[in-house]
Amino acid sequence: MSISYGNKIILAPMVRVGTLPMRLLALEFGADLVYSPEIVDKRIIASERRVNKATGIIEYIDEKNSINFRTHPSEKCRLIFQIGTSDPELALQAALKVKEDVSGIDVNCGCPKKFSIQGGMGAALLTDPDKLKAILTNLVENCGLPVTCKIRMLETAEETIKLCKMIESTGIKALAIHCRTKNERPSDKGHWEIFKPIVENVKSIPVIANGDIFDRSDIQKVKELSAVSSIMIARGAQSNVSIFCNEGLLPKREIAIMYIKKAINIHNNYANTKYTLMQIYADSVKDNEYHALVRAKSYEDLCEIYSLQSYLKEHKLR
Image 1 (cartoon, rainbow, N blue to C red):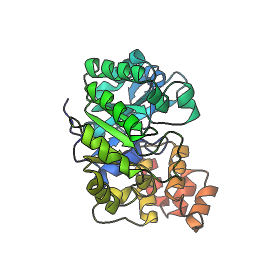
Image 2: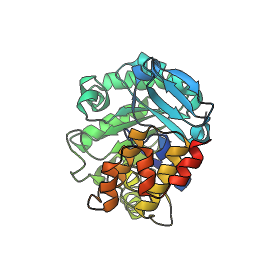
Image 3: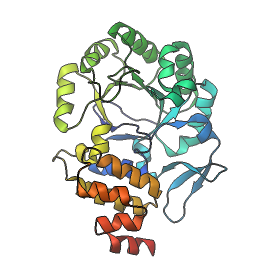
């Protein structure tokens, strides 16, 4: 399967937020590619693939009846599945499990959360280049899909470039760089200056820049600064997914209404829907709508806030 990672604007993998309704909205607004949230290899391997006849949605469900991953055929050609892994064989099994429903596989080498680090996944792989190389090489040689990797920068440019060149040598199709170290947090300013030396040294594959991109003007600024190939957006899209649209940002209320409708259409889990809406309003905590969202306990409550009662009733009858 062929997929291009060059000159793209991409929805970043985001735990809980980057689920199906957000990905579908991102694509509608103009995202070129969308990444799934990180899913741990063993969780997806242990899941059973089912097609929901009511929605056409493909669901990967475990023995506890928990849904670990959902996708719709309409996003397949632009969907990248991100794996959390620390084992070459488990990574391959996970990739093969979802192969028929996605167009690419990404390995998470940037998550700094305790769960990932303790399991040898995410940012832990940045300090174990031999294991990372084995994981990527096994996927590239055997999974039959384009493979990419998303990392965080290391403490120095020299260390980061050395790691990037090793990753490039495995045969992956693109490399995404988050411009913070594993110990830095979103409140710390991202280091856009890291992108230029990486682009100058990693020449055979697209380099994807990630971090502190909050509006369309930031996209152009990063490209001018570094000649980076593609842009990956996380918090900017979480706050307002219309960032993928050239015409400018839509009001939050309009985005929230679109998101709720999409979530209802695809029977999205209510808790996930509310969580994502809370992230949309994370920088607007004084708004009346934010406080109403805090109190909401059901889709009925959400629809009352946004005058969508008739929409919910109509789609519940289907």
